[in-house]
Length: 596
Image (cartoon, rainbow, N blue to C red; front, side):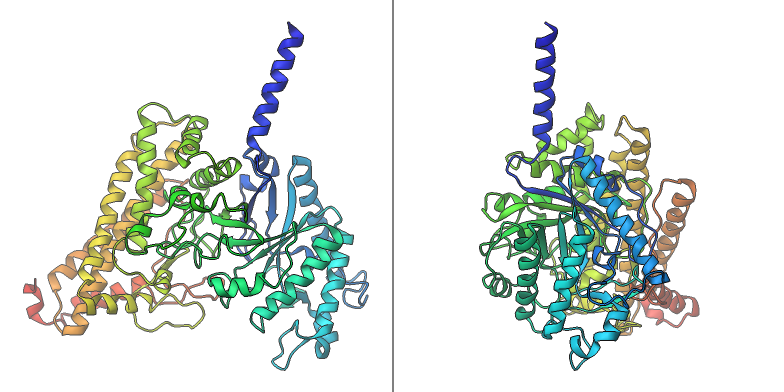
């Protein structure tokens, strides 16, 4: 009897283990995207054991101290990092971290991959070989043979130093040097598709063929490969497929944004692909308030039937049977810059759970996986219906609060609200560096000329009404983990107050914008809306002060790519104050008080 029971238990445990694995040999990867230049993110998703338990097969390390920054280039020239120097010691410390990360991942039973910006090379190396590796514009260039040779040496030393490393994730287009004081670099794509082809062939030969390691080549770049089917095919059709060469593509035709299309390059060509999905959405609160996106990712977003119609594929369900589809890569935490900062990962965990567990067996529906999340988190009885309704409603509310469900919403306009910032309606940015100020001016101008500016503002109030419903639902949900239960409520209040601020801010700016155009301001409406705006800001600040688990707050400034604050003076606050000053000084036309 004991033997039979033991056999039964063993088979049961084996079946559970097998169920948690991907049945089709697909990659299920996760990454914590740490903020460049800031302390590392504290997260359960840093723990490879926790990833293994959720069905992940690999961990992508992205602390922006790249593995290829943790080598000395001694075979090329010992003078690059002289032994015993402070620079050499920095490399030794970085290498030890890489080894510890690889060892921990393997001990948990998953693979270890390192996020890698290309081109990144030691400053001393560039100084020594500048004439051999830089073009006439001073850029390190793969058009120079010596640059290719140096990268071959680099890859050889990299895998000699870290022989257990399973592979690399390659990014071009953006080069973050914040965490590597002794290195420099630039975008290698200096000659369009030919640059990609040259780089991919180098990686294929040196990593996949010669060393049987994996390359995930991210198509995210500047210049078209990520979004243009023609550009993508021009590159990949020039590369001989290899089982260890996989192209990694965001599910969106652009950054992780609503109202942009499903990525049309997915399923194209003859190469394996994995799909990148962000769980802590950088344009949509970063987990500070409910934002369940995986129903949209797996089944298709609401806007794909309204203002962003899709002619082709619109979801992972549509492409899951493609021979090119080899899995998913979730960004459980991070993306973007600075805050909001969260101390409770509940909403990130929900998004990560659903995408990872769905990927283990894509025959499941999104709702079936969602229901298992509720099972595991002790959400039972009537709370199940209310939790599901809250989560689905959050996606609708975010669409209307940040973007639009019906009106045209251009890709650039989305930058008006990103990370912890709320831009204003000033026509001119203070800085050309990724400035978000000026975006709403262009949006308001188009809406005003089309006669739909009032409708755009009404949509923001509609979003606030949805958040009122979400907040009401949150108070009815009972969960086993009382800290998570409290956070669901606090984060729902956060979403409600933030979107009330947004609605009033948009209303003030729209009324002021119209007044700027006509010379007649609706003084009474602007005054009432400013009073509401100020009241909601006070409530918002009180929510944070009274609830330690509450995320940090948004700031009424436009985002600019200038650290460490990433904002200057313009933004929603400045725009509102412009019209506040007009009211307070009485400089508006007296007719405005009776304008309807």
